[in-house]
Length: 227
Image (tube, rainbow, N blue to C red; front, side, top):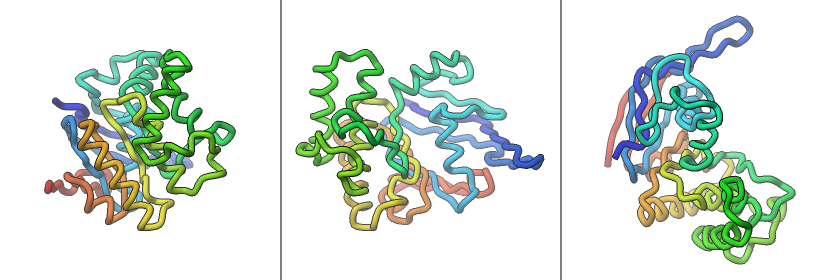
């Protein structure tokens, strides 16, 4: 089953009157259960690609399908519902809400989807257990290490059982030992739950873990390889 499909994907930005071609016609598809990385040098378009696939931004041209649904055909409300229900996000800066505990951060997406508080907390507790943080539900982000915060972010992304998780440079702020631990957690969850993971990265370790590697350069697909 195809989870993501892009055709002729183009994204242009205007900076100080200059047009920057971030993506220049990208055709890619990702199947259910893939553990894939989109890599390339700075400015290659990898983060732009993830933001477009995550419906956080709109393409200049081309199409994006998520679970067979053309994103361009959706209203803003339906796009928000698609992001909220079908896509999980993991960012290099963690993006946790500092005033909330780990439990509250993880349960928030379920609350936004309409789950009652008891159900949301139960599912959040299970997700925290899956990433090895069963005893840290009451801690706030400032009381946790970077690796622990990233585990909370993974739990938050997984708790709603999305079809797709997009991880934008998830190891960038972590040392190599912690980064490896984070990748092992995500790979284990990929294999146990069949969740599709797509990373953007310049980290060689992430590329080595990926079962499929897409290299971008100057907004175009330069090469692809699979293990």
